[in-house]
Amino acid sequence: MRTLHPLQSTAERPDKFTYPFCYEPHPLCIEAAAKVRRYVKTHDELYQDAKEGKMFGVLVVEGADGAFHFLAAYSGLLAGRNDWQWFVPPVFDAQQPDGHFKQTERRISAINVVLELFEPEDRLAIILKERRKQMSEDLQLWLFQQYRLLNAYGEKRDLTEIWHDYHSQKVRQKFPLPPGGAGDCCAPKLLQYAYQQGLKPVCMAEFWMGSSPKREIRHDGQFYPACRGKCLPILTWMLRGIEVDANPQENDPLRYPLGNTQVKLDIVYEDRWLMVINKPSGLLSVPGKESRLSVWSIIRQHYADSDEWALAHRLDMGTSGLLVITKTHDTYNLMQSQFAARKVKKTYIALLDGTIQHPKGTISLPLKANPLDRPRQIVDHDFGKPATTDYIVLGVKDGITRIELQPHTGRTHQLRVHCAHEEGLGVPILGDELYGHGSSDRLYLHAQEITFCHPVTREHMTLRAEAPF
Image (cartoon, rainbow, N blue to C red; front, side, top):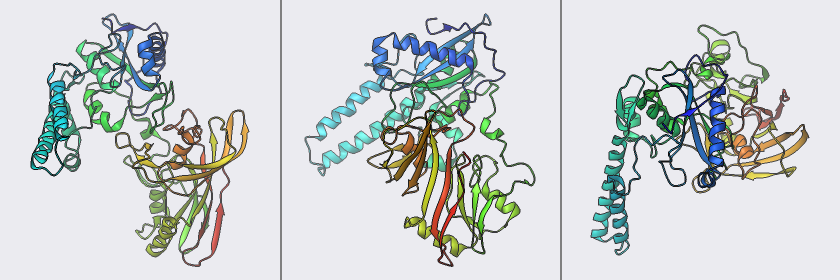
């Protein structure tokens, strides 16, 4: 079996299989990934494509002899092909020139050529456009039905069945079919092949090789979780019958406990109308999908079980620092007006995992959510929302840059993306698991100062909480 590669390792077998959406790569996967990198680099045709940026994956398996082996995969196509022999095959091969998919694609392309001969409002052009749309939708549905995915029990379902079973009716009404490319990521290909060959999955990891995409942020050699938009429904199905690690984020020490919590808020300022706190890193601002502790749940337990209170803005879970809480609806609305008019000035302190060229400047990169991998944000110059950040370097020590950041806008993950993206500073914030290298005790980003006009007294206020690093 040319796709099954030996893995000579002294690393111990993990107790459970990898939770693919949040994990530290097992030593067995790290060794397997190194072998994949070496293989790609010694095959020029593959390497020329891979160095432009490609996601690879490894699945460590146990053979009938009890020895460790590994399988390798790449996302989508590599050097224009999906059938390189050293890697596992696709779940379904839609690239065959004489296959139904390619033949129908050519018919759709022929309609595009004919449409160039007509004015857009011509009756025949309208009919052809409708025909093209229906052919494309039918072809997409047909394609998803060809991806018949196994789980560890030997059960099989196609992508449309998996998608409909996983999502609520509300989601299905808006998104009746999976995203394009679903089923062609590394993890589904690896698990499908392992099941087909009777191999026992042990652990799995995905890593990036080459340059970062223009819109996203990826680092060469870094391991990444599986994407949620495409792979969460698929892997939830495919991992049935395997004992999988728990989501490590659900075991966070700040997870909302059963019963009352004794955690109190660090209050920097308080009066009848508002409160400003110094939020610790690791604490959510508002409750998320998991039952974790949050600023809002602490408020309801210890300060005011009232719908009048509200958070005037939010900080990421990993970000520490100043957070404004209002106590009445009117105060909330007045504070929101200040935020909307960009009259609230915020200053952050961060440590960057590297050094940058210019001591100060301004970053302007429009941002939007990545619909296939939330909560990640991407840079989108066509459809992104404007986002601007000023920065000043405060010092450099041991290759770590201390920097002051002043955002003019309040986009999700704005500072993190502006620091990490190659069109921004090109150096991620230390401890950033989404856009950087992770591997730290916290995200080194702190909201140190906030200036605003008190919504009731009209006093000009500047509050400060020194960075704890």
